[in-house]
Length: 150
Image (cartoon, rainbow, N blue to C red; front, side):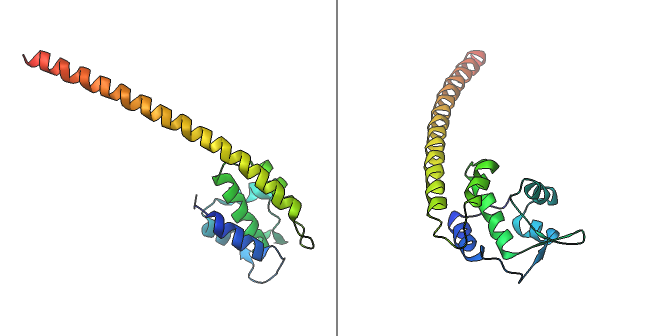
């Protein structure tokens, strides 16, 4: 999956959330641009995260939908569940200040950052333990090779 920077996602999303029929994109082009499968896009649509326009059986994605997909991918990349991503996006109000949306996003982000930092500590501990175990194994192997050579 193509990595989406947080700054790019937020900047592009805030600009594009106002609905526009300009520059509609078909599902195949959308999948290529964001390096996701057609099935992924349909899944996000089924979950209510994306709402492409329909012309017959053709799905057409506006700038708004592309911005939403950027936010979905950003959320997934940093470990948010799709439910959390949807909750945050559903708070968007094109007529309002979106202060509630921003507060919720900040609160969820702080919690996720804390979880990620704890995971990093656990991973660093595991790496340290594995390196120590590998040194013991190397030492044992070298000792046994010396013994068999003698």
